[in-house]
Picture (cartoon, rainbow, N blue to C red):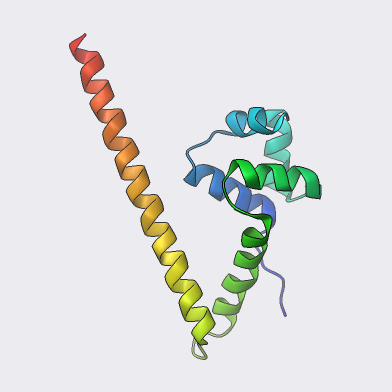
Length: 121
């Protein structure tokens, strides 16, 4: 099986973005520096304890991140030979992305309303 081009640091960066967190906020939450979080995201080099702490802050398990990498790779390798488990995984991933988009829409709406209220003051 081929290795995925996306290392775990890229996944951390993506999920951090989904959660609306900056590197600084993530670093503070796990007791590290922003530059160290940046290093993790750029290189994918991270110890298992820090990886677990980051996953907890991002509200995802380390196993989900690792499985995501494997499952996405399987989907890419066999687009015509789709298995039931791959289909259900893709459906779950799509639902998760829809949920994230809805969350972001709500957040943007709330921030816009706040900006409008602040303009009045």
